[in-house]
Image (cartoon, rainbow, N blue to C red):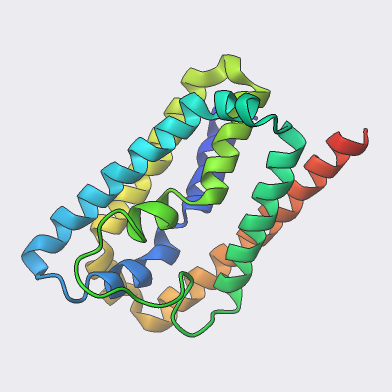
Length: 194
């Protein structure tokens, strides 16, 4: 995997456009002047978590005795379940019931931006091609940066796209994630059987 492919994969898995409705819903009780601060704080929390998984992922895998194939298949299953909820939404949204008050760490930072699939992909990248850690860091920072810009502009983007536009984008991103999940699963099965 090259840096551009890693960047695009991480960006699709982070799904900033699909997260706009969830962010707006989670922040509806937060005063408008404070919303940008809360979004930026949650994005920084997410980046810290993702960097920990990028740099510490291979040690976690070794400590737990997990194979790369197991992480690939588990990441594929989680990604597939999230993608299915995006394509076929359920009441309450992707993350289930809504929390009252100002969100802190959960659900915006984790699991929306720094979700289990993103963490699994980062661990796979460092475990399979650890010598490219600098490239993976650039890919992660780029995907996080694009996600940050999109999520910080969530209110204007929601007005621009409208409710139907946001739903269409979320479903489209869900379809792309289904394909990524299937490919991850097939790669994991091929490695475990081959």
